[in-house]
Image 1: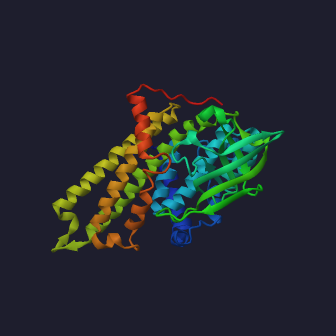
Image 2: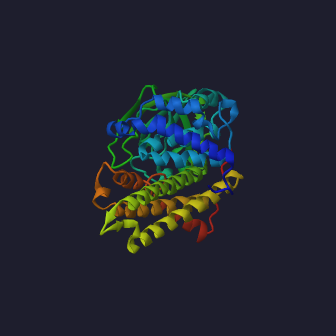
Image 3: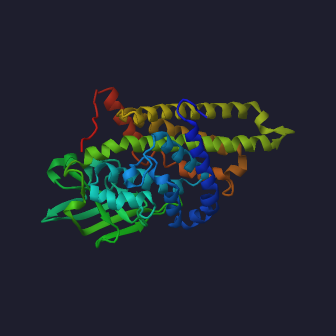
Length: 389
């Protein structure tokens, strides 16, 4: 284990999480993958173990630990071979809850963050829209102030936990004239009249519920505004750095899982009188794949270290997601090849891994958008600044 970033306490946490996942999660994965639904009881079990609270304030039931506990949480989730299950957990813990913690009032945090950490409430973050995709500034969902309420109309899509969550963190335009400077963040309960969700059928991430959500004259109290009105875009952008790093870490972890599996398989699979890990073509292909994974992993740890110190690492986190998700797709593609015909069989892990991994360069900002952000920062001298609440 990397002793530069991980202490003995980190290692003990990793082992307890591994044991928990093997005992409480792995036996249910096939069922959840088939049904496209993760049963609610598992959120409560995660909450009881403190896993949702690792980097949240103790005042709301969290543990307030450093970011490397989060890295461990993400890495081990990738190793149960269900990108969908993992997404349900980290979308709750780091997409929805990040906004609640950063922008929510004390009353909002008391209600939603406490219950999210304990696993009693599940959250989802609603930013992406059917017509917008990666174009956050082009969103069409509106929130109109009427007295002491806001009325929301519009739709969101590709929302993880979008069907079964208890509350929604929603970005909407409060001022249409201001473009991206007219977006605000809101929180609302699932059972608020006018909210409807349609489940989407996906190539991978089969265990997670991904939804298109419609808002039809959804009326919420004005105090459900999170942070300041019209500050939503900088809030979203600020948290994107963390989201991109999360997806970069997920990518190196699933690539490592694929390599570990391929290594074991290659030692046991015989052809022409010897195990296939003795053939130079395969050994060298494995070495290349392994090297690419390690480079991404070390880079991601370094970015985490800087983020942990409070640095605003938007460029580095963007690079993390761009490079790591590309690497993971290539490594898993190669690992499937190592298995030959068995790589194509559903009962072996590579087929699902390949499908699940393919979302990496798409979700949370496509690789094309990420390249443009890097180009703006490196070629045009653009400097993104963190939001102030």
